[in-house]
Image 1 (cartoon, rainbow, N blue to C red):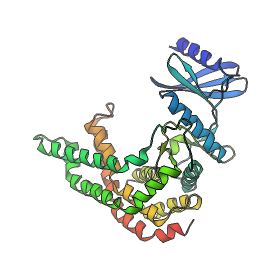
Image 2: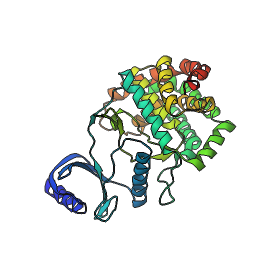
Image 3: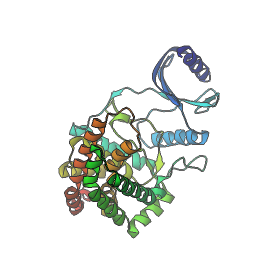
Image 4: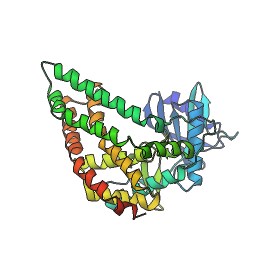
Length: 348
């Protein structure tokens, strides 16, 4: 395996104006792989990516665009002929600069707020981006309502299927005990999106474009030696409202605490607002997205669709309990958040 790899790596690196010294395989997941390579210009990171050429061209263009607008993210090295990637036996490889730093931690408030400011900078820097190929690999902006509707229908179907099973498992019982509450949350979220303002913001973003990272979270971030926050892993960039990333980080932080915390939410949103100010109407769209039980949907689909085959039943049940607690605690927090929007928007 290693000799095959090192041959592949040597062939790819031969396209670059670099001299290779040592190779270390950092991760291998079949279609994806990451190597650290020591070269005459220092360490570089090589990734095997499972995308089309158009997707890779867009990713490289987006990285350059964001870097030019002040975002700290590893640059893409060019080959001797100026290409941003190498194609070898129908596989694609991209070589990045190496960046050193440590992962920020949510439990340190100053680092958490640094993440929110970094996310806001990312969204702001992405404004106006176009695709070099005319195509965007992902344009989730146009799929919001239909995607939430589809998820709602899946939850309804699971509820109906599991209700009819005679010998219910513990997971079924736990899910069914609260299913109606979560279905109500879905309906409320969908009705909150049924506003002319939402459609108007989507129309506007279709023209102006902003990117979401989709996983702007501690695992893809590093605080570098200069105190700058670096963001990695631009594999899943999509054109969308910034709300998608904001909702994801709020859910990540609150589920770790197993409960929503209004004061922490306010601090996070104010930090975001300092850098990329949103209006009260836009924050109301964020509240609608949070209103949808994304955490429950994720957990229930992992179990019923067997997406985590290595997890024990007990782990599934314990995760579900945490998600239920988190999702049930958000209602009062969202109400208060909506009543305190002036406080957030004045912070910009």
